[in-house]
Length: 442
Image (cartoon, rainbow, N blue to C red; front, side):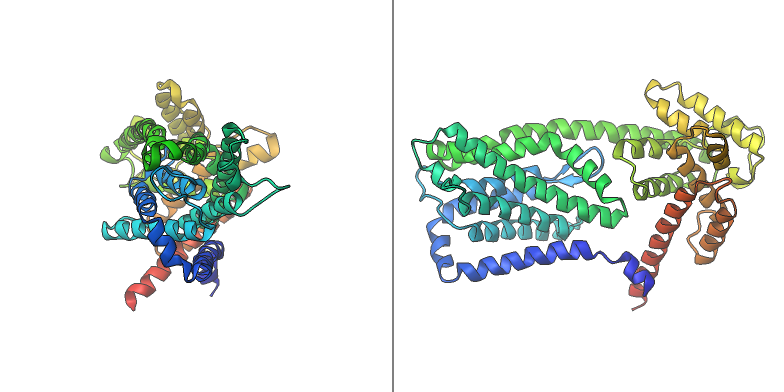
């Protein structure tokens, strides 16, 4: 029962249930008017629906590895604020119809991704729907001191710039709500502090958030003149951003591949076991997330963990099984120093080299002498010891024995906070594997 509770995700389920309830409520409130609305605005709805589906299918991979769909978000927000459209009936509908159309678009795109055997996460889609629903309500229903964004679109005495700013603010509010909900779901899934997940989510999305937020008002202001052509025209800047962000993400991926290839030198030379560096890297990043480290620091930790054994190539006689945790402290320091010396030849990897160089420093020197040892070094020291002691095995007996061995050095060799985070990550992974095995056995 304890394991089941540990891997449960009540917040993600709550976001999904609220979104589902919103869809049902919108359907009920639309009632008998729905067929008439669908018939009257059929062309408009089909165009926006298609844009949302396409936007979801051509998702953008951010440098951190997150998948996002700015084209789908921009199209949905444009539907939430659009009003008069040349050659089409004025899109004077309640937020309920907007919710239903966006929900259908997200559902169709999710089904298409499933058919292509691509992963689909429901909670982020639910968060997007809730954000769009809030924007649609602000524009189409809310009125403050007699001012209504919807009515202002059709009034000639209100400057278009004022209307555009108001709609952009409404779209920005919806986007921020979406990002906060996604950060909440991500923090729950990755066991990351909510403040850290929020900082990373908002920080990485900031460059695209402005472009997405202004797309809706652009469509609303251009559609009385350009008609439905306003939608693809307004999406052009985002399409251009896809190319720039995609190229940057590809460059990051290439750098990671180069570092991963370099890390395999010790494997090919027989110094370390197969995939040891990859396991330590993956575990280090997960521990770093639990400790609330930011994406930039996690990237440096990932690189340092991949290269933490690079100094072993200078050894005449390899350490048995490459287990540096069993080597003499002086040998450990020499290996770390040699690895750092090699890494420093790349000027952009100074932080990585420092993590590698200080990975052998016992925690007591931090506690007793006040030495400055980066958290990345403390994490790698702990995760490397864990993988050395388990030999890469995920068998419960091996994992438990390794954790017990590490606890013997708690506060002396290893940072207690890092050990606690490692224990949580390992327990979650063990619970997940037990659940998978139970499903397979059924």
